[in-house]
Length: 498
Ligand code: HEM
Image: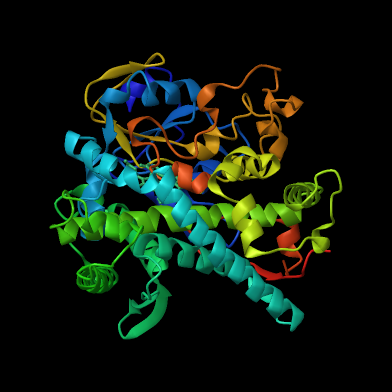
């Protein structure tokens, strides 16, 4: 601690030896409500109360200490100049190993990791993406027709998070397993004989959250030797759930291998890609590891983004109208004579033509601003996984030793009042170079890494390109925070746009 405070870094609390500030953390967690943000946001808000949160500080939530970084210049050094010294903290992999195995997500940045990353990135080649995107557009078109029918029949009450989450799950499962029939739900053990059917991605996320809470059990603060053990009924259930889930993946892989014996078999999905890649083909465990990563990394993050965006469309004045205007401009057959939205003949072919890969990248300007602003104000991943340096380095004047972990806090980075005007407000125009909101409060250009929802450097999100592509009155006054971490419940009433 003194090593860092001597360098003038703020330490919000004097920690207890070994225990750190675990009791405050537990108190904060005990006070969680529907409106609480993630632990990583709430704990620091609690400590700093109304004071500004420093852009770098040394934190002792647990006795081991950690640097919390949200300074854009430090982020730049971590991603670029000092990138070769930056790696993942090895303990994270240990906790997640039974679920994610050797997957690229928690692995250290080695040559093997880089090679596997490269192989997996072929899933995002333009031709494959276009193929998958077209399938997703068709699926979404049919889904919207179903919703319209339901509204006509008066069945217009939905729960926002699960409505978006379930549809995205369908889309992602198609990208991962193809258009074949596959299992969407699995028995999830809650406790004892109490089970429920939960979707694959919800199961993966729940297990991930439980595994990531293992290091905060008090006895693990004293020793690392129990990291891979499952202690107590709750942890044993995590293990049983992991076994059930991975057995189900084994069945899917077996079935696919059988199907691929047919000489007419053809697939652009992720599982086929792995089963035809010589690095993965013979290694079922590695295939399960990467499938788990893709299910985990893709669904909850994109579901959180879209759910949040839907909320802001309803919540922030004028935003929805501007999007409707863009839809009319994009979908009217004649740009000189714009139709109203209910006059447009929505067909599947029109969607495919106007929402294709290139069009999404080039033409939907306002939609792009909306997505960027949603990712800024509520990055679905609030902070990076813990990182560590392989050699001691000086980063922006601070000596960082190899024995300390650090996290980049995207949420604080993207709400930094020096970089963003009115950072707590949803203003899509801040991503439009022609708007005055594009600049910092001092009228300057923003620093390059002030916005970084996908991480950066060698370990930047692999799905970045893919991803880019209210009933209770209280929900109008106060937004429920949504990250990839939480399952929120906001009932909504749907109606067709007039
Ligand atoms: C809005 C959507 C998304 C956001 C905000 C997001 C964000 C992130 C972030 C912050 C990381 C770094 C995590 C860390 O190591 O600390 C990451 C890694 C990763 N993401 Fe995404 N992601 C999104 C969508 C996707 C999609 C759709 C896929 C796949 C189809 C994907 C696949 C991955 C993979 C494989 C990694 C690990 C890369 C590595 O460690 O080498 N993500 N993502």
